[in-house]
Image (cartoon, rainbow, N blue to C red; front, side):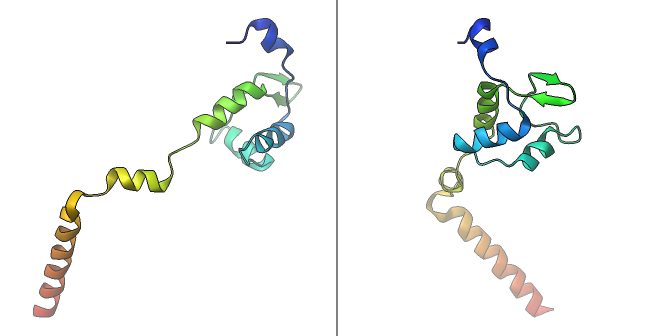
Length: 107
């Protein structure tokens, strides 16, 4: 955990600098993307630490926490969790589809 003295010594970044910082640390982020996330309509961007005139200033450590919180599991790991066991769901779907086709040809 950082102390107040350590966090006050951390260099504050503008939004453009923050986009470059996040990209360097493995979170490819453009300036315009940050601008969109930080707009009042979206308001899901990294928290602004303070304001210098009309410019929001960001603390890099908090921005990294924000970027990490936006990570989600890969589609492969999600598919493994939601895959039906023994194909029971898949066979029911095939049966429903064949029933619909049979009803369409009967009409």
